[in-house]
Image (tube, rainbow, N blue to C red; front, side, top):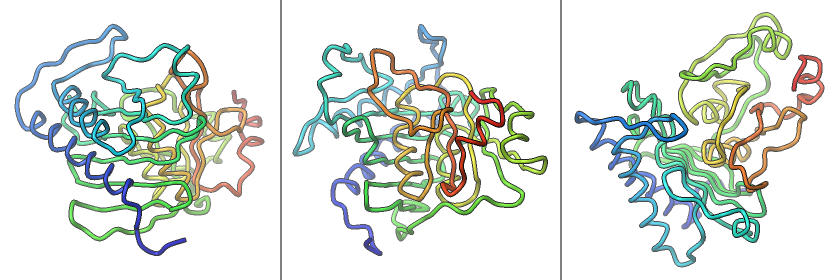
Length: 273
């Protein structure tokens, strides 16, 4: 494993995420309107501006691959099921946090191969934090644009454990969390895919998500967490996978930092799924 970040494509995608972040921040600093999509989720000019930047950047790579993105029309399953590699993108993950102006939103870009996220980039535009990972290359954190890259790792389950929880969505059943982690755990609310990144840099231990998420919400951050030493598991204990069928909705899942724990057994004991 290299002690420096030497992966041209990963660095290129990181720069692309930063450009998308700049487009988002241009809207963030001004007054903006909010639309409501058919699925009742919010949409702003920032989502569309970031989508435009990312789509153009991916189209200029040496190898052009299909793209699945929250803010673009999706290819039918008959076509997607033939794909072995493609980009999976959420131009602005955490639009509700963007609207609240609390800074807890991200740009997510993932490369999927055979259903697995093998490259992931997560940018927090407000702080400038950038998390990047590639299969077999580890996870790296740049605290702000131009800063040195730092290799990061998950931690062993802390005592007391810290559970990352959603800022704007429910799903943190207290009884279930006590069964998973014991009585003395701390809850750290946070928006968007930053919850995965909190685990990846050893600042939290688990993130349980009950309720629906879309594949573009999790893929990039899953790679970030896995390469840092963690895992994202469905409620039977199997790794979360992508392009599974016509639906782009994930099963409920548990993201963990310490993979030395038998989480499948803990989930069964906690009454999951």
